[in-house]
Image 1 (tube, one colour):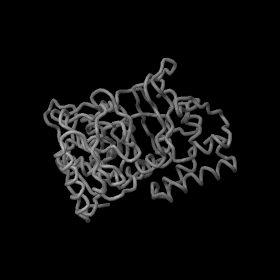
Image 2 (tube, one colour):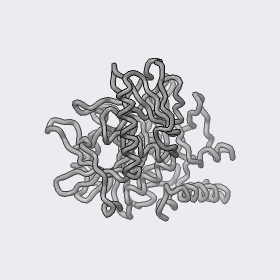
Image 3 (cartoon, helix red, strand yellow):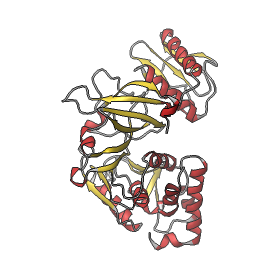
Image 4 (tube, rainbow, N blue to C red):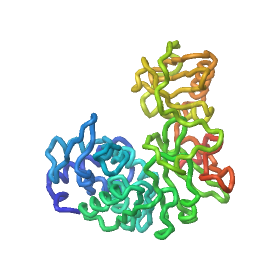
Length: 383
């Protein structure tokens, strides 16, 4: 690491940052905590970050207020698709809580070789390299992002990060096979090329489109089957090209707000939920019906949740964290949603990590392996 990490005040700040993530439960192991306490996040911001539509420069030695923000549980947007941003697309350093939980899900060990799909700022790859002490190959389609990630890793003194320009769907077979593959963008399925580059007992941690968001799955081979187990709630910027190709018959996520319409409200249909519990409910809805998605409409507060059942031309019904259900159009859709919420409660409110699926390739010409039916895991199947 650079000399900046030897500053007593910065060392203390980074240790506190890591300890806070462990206290929240995102970090569970000493190896991951040590990585967060030693890899300097402020060195992985390419000149600054965007917030509320403005760019905030980050100097080589940020002031205390900037360091407070950087070493907090906050995602920082580093690129936006504007005429003066050479990256040409959105890119960020993810929320540390999500990064930490994904690293824990990878079950990393010294000597493991890792492929990362989506280079971001290089921070994630450097954390992984610190844990494994082995080469981490991080790839991205943007030359700008790859160059910045490589320079940031070099600034931080991390010699085991190799940043390359490549198509994420194809992976990077020349450096394989990999013990672990981690994906830092939302995808609709698992690329067959990743499986070709994964060791037989390898593991893929990946955010997969489901019900309008991108919960993280842990994917492993079990005999001839490819099993995806729910890990946690998360949401990432969507990948492009084959990595975000929707299988035939699958309802695509909504990207535009719905037209303003009168809303009917049913109060106290479900329990009042904390955010993580709400995502558990949202995930469960997605396992039960393909009508589940995220939708925006006027007069609904997005912070209370946007999970809904949506049928184009017929109607939409939302359940929010305060337990209230709102709907437009056919009330039968609201009836369906109310029944599904009650079913989830009756089952004991199963979480994302209580579910698994078999991922299948619909045909040899299909672009990816996609989740099939979802099932509840038995208690002894939890790790």
